[in-house]
Image 1 (tube, rainbow, N blue to C red):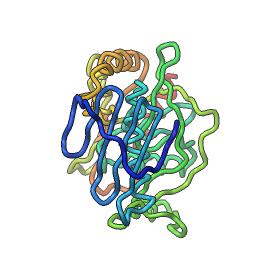
Image 2 (image 1 turned 90 degrees about the vertical axis):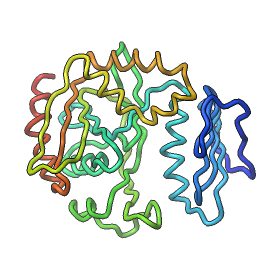
Image 3 (image 1 turned 90 degrees about the horizontal axis):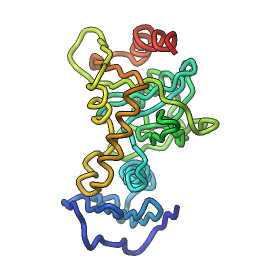
Length: 273
């Protein structure tokens, strides 16, 4: 894998999908982010980027580790999930959900109380004997200021991701070994509730629920070869992985949500493994 800063990023001559933000085909991807920079990826092996004047290193890394990383995985046909992962009682757990649902905050809260950190935000899933495996490649997590305050983590020395946000990078010890079986997926959403609620998703609905959590599924508008591969992967995962939906109240303390999920989901699943 080569990652190079260049004076001019390559353009895509024959994009299958193109809009004002992205261009892509099966082997190439390009993106321009205003006030940050331009990016290009080819065959999951070559990355070029050109920062715009005044762009911070942290803002560049945000897109390199997010949208660009997702493009690399898609080009390699490695299933990328929009989720953060940790180990709890030997169970490989992925927390999924839309941006702002609380994936990273919840993952950090679990790790702050004994779990082992694996990934943040984008998780590559590979398969061994048709069982899904978490590839633990992350060594830091993105956290909001209010989460750091709730967990008593000092912001001294932490790098702010963007000047306009109260979100910071927190360095964590990288997981040892790198590959862990995925046992449980929890999709997280927010609603006006007094207490969190959960339900298990079963049957064919599991495939649809997992598909909704594929990172940057919209890229496949320009990468049609991936559809069949991913469908097969998701069917395989649905056969062996338990999937739960958790809807949390807006503003619930993160430690309270950890307690709820341990009691209502994780202890029960760990007893069945």
